[in-house]
Amino acid sequence: QVQLVESGGGLVQAGDSLRLSCAASGRSFSGDAMGWFRQAPGKEREFVASISWTGGHTYYADSVKGRFTISRDNAKNTVYLQMNSLKSEDTAVYYCAARSGSGIVADTPIRYAYWGQGTTVTVSS
Image 1: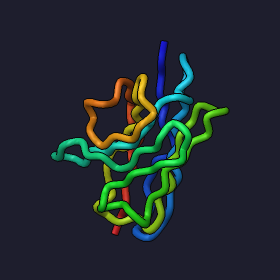
Image 2: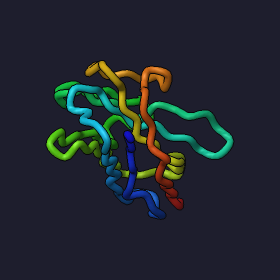
Image 3: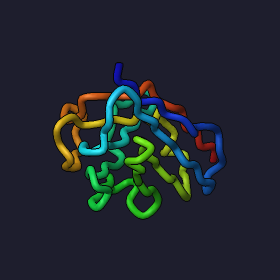
């Protein structure tokens, strides 16, 4: 059974940092691109960041570019999202996602085959 489990969310103040982790189990995703999405209350799920299977190519939403960094450790089957200079508008449930059969970054949810349950990030201003 394939599982993606996010961790690292919490309540922080504006300007603080958080590091999210997503541990995959059930199969290796070392050949697949992975990504992070988020969904704020009352809003649609939106793309945050994506990373290629080697980690050599990353892609970010304009709203997080320069503040967030996505990375991965294929030996641990884990992807990370380092979030710095957090803002109140970053408050959301953050979801990890994995593609299947493609190592290319993508910014649309339909391109991802596996999803985690989400971890909540709350940024107080």
